[in-house]
Image (cartoon, rainbow, N blue to C red; front, top):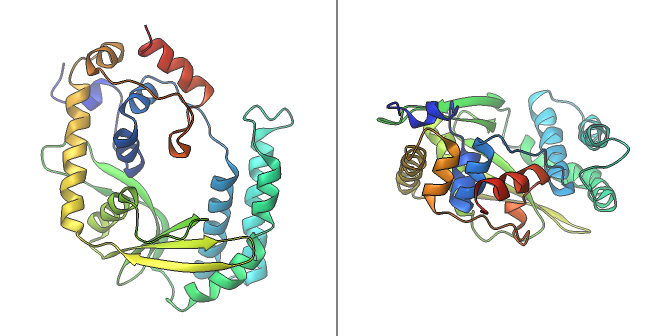
Length: 264
C-alpha cells in the first residue's frame, strides 16, 4: 500500500456526487470503483438537464425564451438518440413526454426571474478545492457563478421546505472553491404551475467539517487493501439492491458487481 489509497485504486479526485454516494451507499461507491458502472437515463434527470440548459443559455448567451426552449427540447432528443431503438435502459418515454410538455411554460415563467439576478460571471465550469492531508482534490461542475454568490439549480415536484443535506454539502463545496456564499435554487414544478424557491446555505462551516470527515472515511476504507475485492470483503458493508430508493438505483452492471464483490 502507498501513502495514497485513492491512487492505489485509480481514484484521481473526489466529487460532491461521490461523497454523497458514499454516504448513501458505501457498497455502491466501491462497486463503481471496481469498474462496474451503468449509464442511467431517467425522465426526471432528462428534464432537470433540459431546464438547466435552457436557463443557462438564456442568462449567459442572452438568447430569447423561445430559443432557450428549443435548446432545452434538444436534450430530450439527444437522450432518445443515446438510448437507441431497443431501449435497453427501460427508459419511460411516457413520463419523458409529460416532462417535456412542461418545459415551455416552466422556462417562460422561470427565465425572467433569473434575468433579474443579472448576468453570471461563469457557468458550467469545473472548480476544485484541496484539503490538508487529503492526497487528492475535490472537483465538480458548478451551475451558475455570480459576482456575489454561487448558485446551483435543482428541479423538483415536491415543495422544498429546506435544502437537503446532500445539496448542503454540494453547495458548500462550491463555496469553498469560489469563496462565495452558496444558494440552491429549486424549480418546483407541478402539472399546471411552477415556482422558483431559493435557499441560502447556512452553517457552511459545519458542512465543511462533514465533507472532510466523510472524505477521510472514504480514504480509510480504501486503505484496507490495494485490492478492491479485499476492501469490499473487509469493509463489512452490505449493498441494498431492493430498488426502493430512487436516489440509489442500481444498474445492471452495478448489480453484477455487487453480487460478485459482496454476495458470497
